[in-house]
Image (cartoon, rainbow, N blue to C red; front, side, top):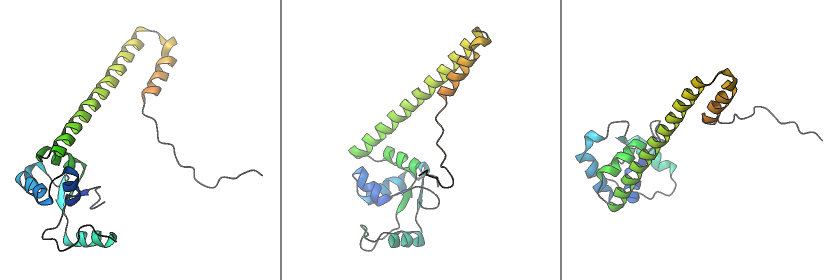
Length: 155
């Protein structure tokens, strides 16, 4: 977490995408208009120092010429579209497939809700309970709330 965002740093992303860090940074600089501040930002010296002090065994080693870039989730997705490594291309393809699946799921749920409304109009109030129950089943599950206090166990 940096500046309130969950991020991945340029050296780690370069390794994941199978390119050198300088290649990744160079690609980003060529396409800066694709990376607004909520997609990517460069760490300040203070942020980088704090980060290094939190990591006991630094894999970055040595003196760095430039401060690393931090990429949010959207920045990581955009990055996969501008890099040309085989791995980056595969990641980009999987991101596109995930968006298509998500869109299909949303459309299916929307169609189901529309059909349910049509059926409800056709039938009288005797089926209202059934339709209400179906709507409840279509809602996403609520996260269970944590209990507050102590549990008393009976001897």
